[in-house]
Length: 195
Image (cartoon, rainbow, N blue to C red; front, side, top):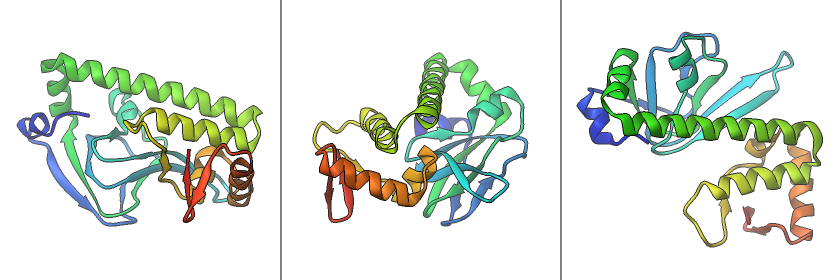
């Protein structure tokens, strides 16, 4: 989201995480802006029974964890590397300075946060009142809409990740995807899902 040259200008550090490494924990106070240089980060919560609810997966050039940073409240979820990941880490005071000096970056951040709020509202509606097939298609269509592909869209989420993002059980996701394939809403090629 923020150009690497601007992050470097404000002395952002580069941090390398191995698969499974935790960047921040639920309940910690935020101190840095994070943006992925390469790799993948998941942000999730666990309920009292240990069931994971994934808030989101973030990829190259995406930022995450900004609301607690800007709102000065503890992280509501934990972030973890899904594979070897490199992130830019910028201290809060330097991040505020960057935003004050770069209106276009500030505007882009505001737009990104607004889109995430829209996504959260959409997912909450889906989880509360729709069939598993509908929930999964809504998630896939949302992800497809935010890519540049005009061809068939490959869903780069595991069945477990789809379950965690939609509040479903993995078995339900597997069954629903098979139903969607039978309805010709998706294609399964080599265990990969396409829409």
